[in-house]
Length: 259
Image 1 (tube, rainbow, N blue to C red):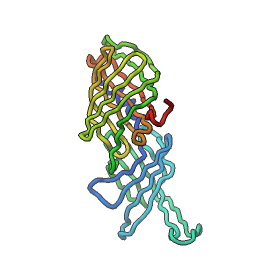
Image 2 (cartoon, rainbow, N blue to C red):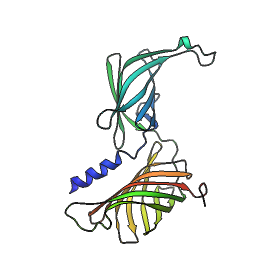
Image 3 (cartoon, one colour):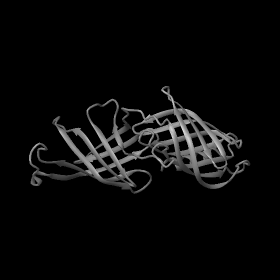
Image 4 (tube, rainbow, N blue to C red):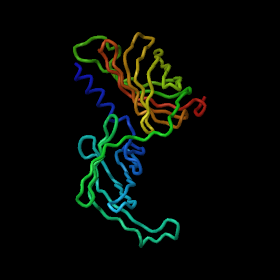
């Protein structure tokens, strides 16, 4: 049963997170990797230094998933005209130097690239320079799937539920997090600890609902512009381990939406 729970949670987790961010090796200052994700394609640029110590620019403009969860594609080096003068397109040079592979993991990403036959692998982490505070009242909806665990009883309503929700978030300076959610069938309170990696937030904690449902949860891929809008993936296991709750929540801050 533990393997079943782990597989279900991992399957949902892979689709909730946006990889767009500034990534780097924390112990290696002065270079980094910018990742921009559009649907299932990554555009990656890397600012680094060559063997001569001079700045060098690499990019991959079409890294996509071929197998598993890794994004792969051609890797290029670009040079061009001085940016302070008139643009001379004849001075632009783009050369394919190898391949690149970006493999996201729970807390980091493995980045492997080849330049002229030399293969380099780095473990990258998202950079954080400003925490997002989501404290606000929100209006939106959720789509969650109640999945019974085999050989158990007690999953209250197996199947997909899609319905409007409103909720309040209170986020404190010590990273304590509380979300009070109201849906047509009742209310749920989610409490936990907030952490952030780059532009993505995550909360791990416990939940308790008015219908008696309670357990542990993770809200991840929390992404938004402060309290204007918010989306995240929700993964929970009931206290008696009889039910998996997995889905997504999306909402706008009420002062920005329709009242």
